Length: 133
Image (cartoon, rainbow, N blue to C red; front, side, top):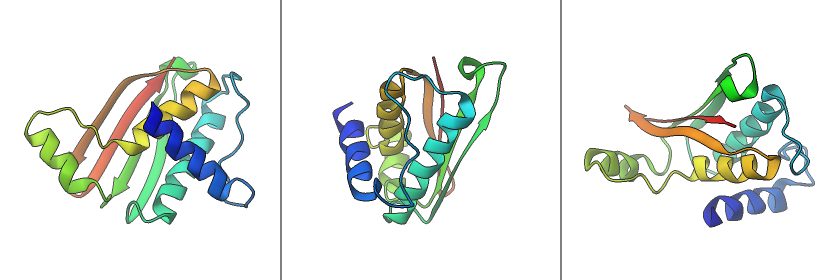
């Protein structure tokens, strides 16, 4: 939680007054899935712009409500690729899941909790999936 909040605060501090700012979500407002996805997409763009990965994207498979929606973040060649793959191969807890930590901070501020989260690796991609409630 500390790491995710620190990253989110730094992104807001660095880009908050620019055209690249993460869209504002009022604290506790529990936005709809499309609004929340827009914020996640811009966060992913800022991670990529900052050199975290070669490219990145965010998407969702929308359910009947935001609680039934699954969000995905995919980074190609992230800086944490090798270490993340090593942790998964050793069946250890992935602790360098910085995008997920940041999304958790964003969700908490928006009035949600991240659930059913996972971080997996396929080739040179880091694939993070989660839902909110």
